[in-house]
Length: 108
View (spheres, rainbow, N blue to C red):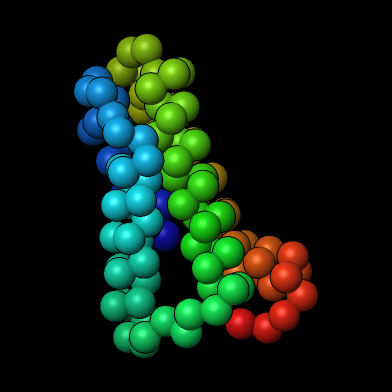
């Protein structure tokens, strides 16, 4: 939930500046990963399922940063899109691990 809020705020505050979409999505995903594992107080168990689940989160962040440049033409549309992207990230974050397990057919 903190990562979804962070994504929404990040998108809203960066609405009127040019973005390097790949690097911002990568940096955001790294920050979300650090926050998640610090809150859980555990070291990640790196596996194919783990990589795919974080790739899905990164992909959503990449699309959100890219669409923010395309769709947000004024402050209201930027605010609405940032809120929508935050909500989408919240739901993808909750389902990413289960999606990765279903797609790869293994356990974490």
